Every structure is written in C-alpha cells, then in structure tokens.
Image 1 (cartoon, rainbow, N blue to C red):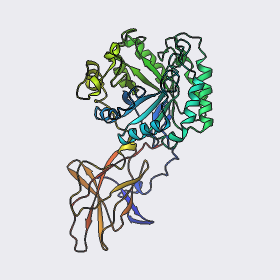
Image 2 (image 1 turned 45 degrees about the vertical axis):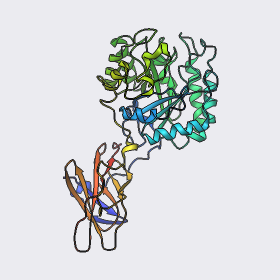
Image 3 (image 1 turned 180 degrees about the vertical axis):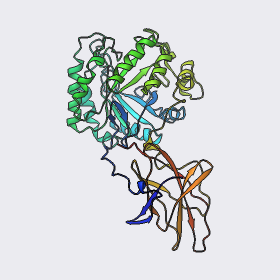
Image 4 (image 1 turned 180 degrees about the horizontal axis):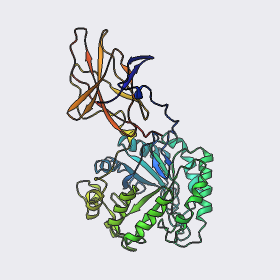
Length: 430
C-alpha cells in the first residue's frame, strides 16, 4: 500500500499514512536542460539518460522525415542528425533545423544535432574548422533556444584527421567557452580527433581539461568506434578510462564492418551496456552503394532490415532490448486504455518532484467528489477522496514510475468508470 498524502488548493484533505511521509523535502532547483551529473548524462529532472539510437543522414535526405517515426518504432530513444554547414555539405537551413527539432519531440526522441562539415579537417581539403562550427551554431540559436530538455548540440563532427599534434584541446575548449557566452544552455557534445576514433588518445588523455573549459560542466564526449576498435580489450579499456574518471561519453557512431578495419560490434554493444554508455549505429539508410553494408534498412523501408540492422536493432544488447524512453516524453502521458463514457477526463500530470506528483483533471458537476487510485497492472490501490480536481500526492519514492487514475462519485454515491490512467516518473532524490 502506498504511503501517500494529498493537498488540494491550500487545504490538507487527507493525512499521510505514516508520519514520515507527512511532507516531502523541497526539490532542489533543476536546470531545464539535459545535463551532466557525477560523470553521467541525466535529464532535467535528474533521471539517468542512456541514449540508444541511430544516425539519420539528413544532409543527403532532407525529405525522408518518416525516418524519425521508423527509428522510434524500432526501439530507439534518440536520433543523431548530421547537419550541413555549406562547406563540405549543403547548408541546412534554420527552418529545417526547426522541423528536425519538432519531429524529434513529436516522435519522443532525444535529438543530437551534429555540425558535420568539420569532418577530417587538416586532411580533407573541403572540411572546415571548429571555429566555423561555432559560428554555424550561433546562427541557429533562435531555433534551438528553449529545447534544451531534448536536444544536445554535437559541436563539430570528427574535427581533425589522424595524428597526435592537432590543437584539439585548445580549439575545443575555446568552442565550449564561446558557445556558453553566446547563450547556449544545452548539453554540448565534443568529438574525438582522428576522424572521431581518437587513435592517439588525445581526447581520452585531455578530456578533464576540456570539460573544465565549460563553465556549466555540461559537456559529454563522443568517440566513433570503427576500425581502431577491432577487439574487446580496446573497447573496454577506452570506456573504462572514462567511467573511472567520471567523464561522460557516448559512442556516436559505429558499425558492424568498415572498409578501414573491422569493428568489434559485439564488444562495443556489450561494454556499452555494461558501462551504461549511450551508442548510435551508423546509419538508418541511404549510404552510397559501396558502403551499403552500413545501412540498417534497405531503401528506407523499416520492414526490410539488413544483416547489420538485425544485429543492431534486435541482436544481443541491441537497442530494442534495454532502451528506456526519456521521462520527459512519458511523464503525464496517458496509459494504454481509453476512458469509457462517464469517466473523469483530461487527467494530467502537471508537476513532479522526487517525492510528489500533482494531478489535475476536468471538474464535473457541482457536488461531484473524486477518488484517486494508483494502478498496478490489473489491480489498484485507493489513495484519497477529494472534492477538488487539483491534488498533490506526497510521500512518493524517487526514481519510480507510477500510474494514477481517477473515479468520480455523484450526489447519490454512484461511482463512475475509471479515467484513462497517466504515468508519472519521479526523479532521483538529490
């Protein structure tokens, strides 16, 4: 039985079941953005956020917007989207960025936006600099401001070629400072040099120094695991170093095979699972014919998976096996059932803290009272009766998913059918 108390308006309507649950501690002030805490990526409400998703080649296929729904249906909780800056690739327009952000939210996906034209700078003559990427992002701030709860900014994709003498530390640190000064409150993601693979361990050995350049500390590191990561020992050693030093890392790209070395995809996925590290497979569809082995589905058809798609999506440690939707998309959403005629309607979760959930619904006729219940599968527990349609449940546990519903009672005491349930996920107690 849940130990819950309830307040409606400013009046205490029901005492708590136990003295300990009389009043939840005030919640700590929370940033509205995805952020880093204790070396891990967390949501705005403090819940752990392990991103598992797919890269979608928006630069080349800006009209394939059905991909977002297909990636979600495949079990992903996130998508990484390359954007063009007008150097190596066609420049992505501000209105396209706004569309991508909207599609991510509509499809309940955390979105990593990636400035792609920096790929291989110093070895690819068409590539541009990290400084140019900062200018690119600054121009998009109007489209990105206010969406920090589901968008991460990947500052510069694979910003240098191979070698250990690139000014990665200086230029990446400067980019973080400049983006914060420009007003970005998003979590920022920075890529390794060496075409993203950090073959000289420049990022691994200097990550703490770069993180210190971000005045908010909300920087996550991104490694791309292709041919450099061709055995389990290399994968585990690299990820363990970041975990041991409490430095957040994501595997932003990897594949089952590659023309320059054979990645150990089994180890990559297994150790990502072991370390609770996010990962993104490259890529959904549309790679050039000589690279078709990188496609997860044939010709953008979600019903026609490639061998790599089957491995990545439904194989051991695949994204369909242990991927949780971000709580911002689950909190306050309706359960599976539809409310029958006569049941209370418009039940909503309007506020959540580690110890409380506030519910509102549409008020019925004069004299109607309501009974709030917690739903546990096929059973339920009564919580409180009230004459209000705005209540706060107290004494809840942090890091817990609850399901609530409401009944109405008329003047003669007849109880209505049960409302459609809603989910509420409480954040961790800090």
